[in-house]
Image 1 (tube, rainbow, N blue to C red):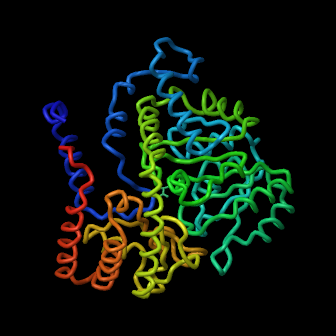
Image 2: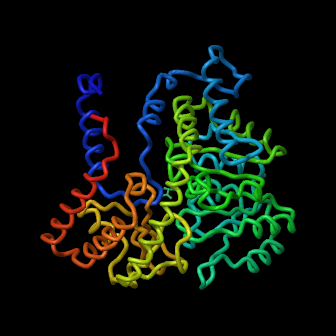
Image 3: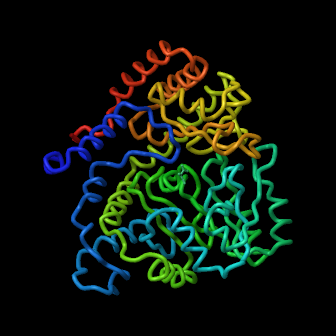
Length: 414
Ligand code: DSN
């Protein structure tokens, strides 16, 4: 970064600080990951200079011979990976991808049945503070005492309210979804079936969990979580929805696609087709299960019964008598990054909820396995229990940095 260093020292210094934070920190935010240096190079490429409204072979401006190459490659690689009929790789991220789908398929006031936020759903699945919830009518389903979605209740509600879309998917739910049930309930009530796989796309791509694409009419995802690509979104759909989705992306919702980002998505998709990505995806699940087992041993209450994906949600308030926010701050002090999170029907406020969401995709990318995960669980427990003991926190922090240095993320970045 010699040009940046010379021209804009303040930004350069912040990037260097962030690099050190990422290298020396234990990243356990379930939605974060580290892209490869090849993905970074594509993202930082001169494709950022180009406007290319439209789609390969039918753009509005000239000079598209290379943008068409990269977007076509991204599409064909994504199709191979997810076996989808149609894919749009232009959405800027997950929230716009969901909004694009709603506006393609719904009229204002139409009903959507989606998962409740505190039960693991996402803000864009109908939380009242969001724009979609102001335009469409969201009715939200929940999980039962056993941590599973109550599909009988879901069917009953669907029959009663007749939603236009039944939406599956989550951002803090840890169990595998029953794709067949979602799809058959949607068919029974004449709804469009949609799933948001943002969190688990990498596990699906790596065949560590089964592929929902054959069961759903519409699939949205981000590209930067378990999939380990640049920040971005994608929409997959059955042929019959392709035209409506493409029109809703452009000109309906977005302007020029971010071609540097699409180039980086294409690089990530090729990486995800490699056999090593399958190993990565399987290791994520092994690591998450070890984390669950260890945290349980230390007395943490595990939500939803268990984990079947890349993360664990714990009720830290009832387990350790510490609020989510305070636990998050204590862990930050030892270089372990997690996020406070609501638990089902949380009695506490969303700004200071009862839970912590802890995910392993990023540490798994570094090469950490069961042995390191056991140590991480021990540090999480120690840091929370000794949150008022600065000496102990400093000692844990030193050990965290030492382990992170053994698993470097970027060997060539300076
Ligand atoms: N912020 C992402 C997550 O952490 O799940 C999704 O919005």
